[in-house]
Length: 148
Image (cartoon, rainbow, N blue to C red):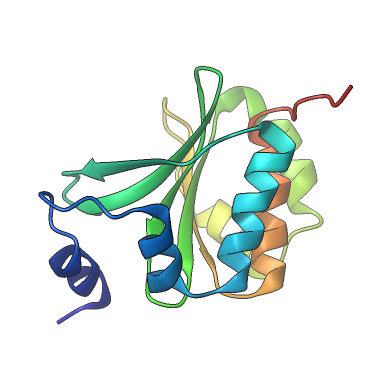
């Protein structure tokens, strides 16, 4: 049984997990740090949603700022995968941000085809450097909320 199957067996479409159950399944401080970053930077709250997508079926966590999608977080045992879409308008700024990212993230960006809907990057947050890459790309995706 694959890791994703374990998650989807534990939480089928008829049983929505709560954020505490997601935290317990992921059990990684980088996930908590990502949640804090999204809350503190954007005021974004997690929206737990079920996806029937053929590539990633099951429960995931979406974050939005206003009407704009920030990212979708896919649940894994021990880590999360964050999907960020970089649109055509953000390409130049993303290229600049990538200069500070890991070689893995730069290679992923180059391998990912651009489409009308942007580049859909799937980043495994397995180490602190990958979390920093996710943060850098999120800051390109959507400008942060200015604090008073």
